[in-house]
Image (tube, rainbow, N blue to C red; front, side, top):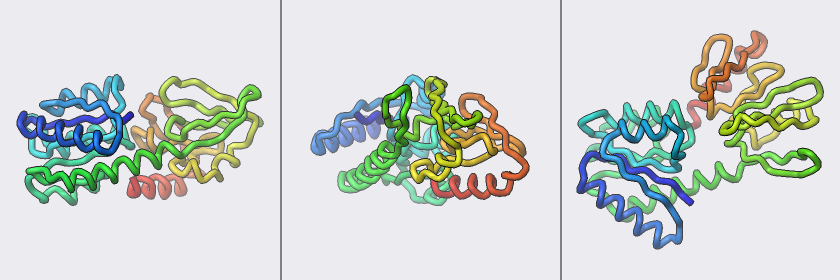
Length: 240
């Protein structure tokens, strides 16, 4: 099920978009919960509280309380995966959208065919992220862990601790960190240190000698890995 947010301070536009999205998803046979907000502060409050994890956010650029682009930058600090689709009456902000990895733009008044195209793109991106997972054997059971659920991996002797983002649970397996680093499914992970692989999606701050993750965890960056870490970080930043 998709979780979608609409943030627009114009009540008429907000209702029209809500109905258009609902009709489109009904035609496609896609289930969704749609939440509507009349200002960006309410939306940001929900995101920061982590009570709802949105898949798609429709965000008006021109609002009285806060510029939609500013709101998107705040959202990106909390969630690097959510699809942000801007609503605008002007294309002046298109280039700024690259900074926050916008999935697309919808020019008001919203055209149904354009809504369909941008929704199709967003759903495809969501499905691609959901497919990425690693397969491990834990306590005699083989299971898949979606890579988006992993905060970081930590090497400890001949074992690797897989730390989950939402629960901070540690799943320990007998393996080498090098084996995980070579896994294509972990293409959003950065080897910051001989003992750590960090999920870029949860990096809140990049400091000289450490990453600070959204959970507040500090992961060291070794001197020997510093140049490679910088290259990997900015490559991922530009690709998101």
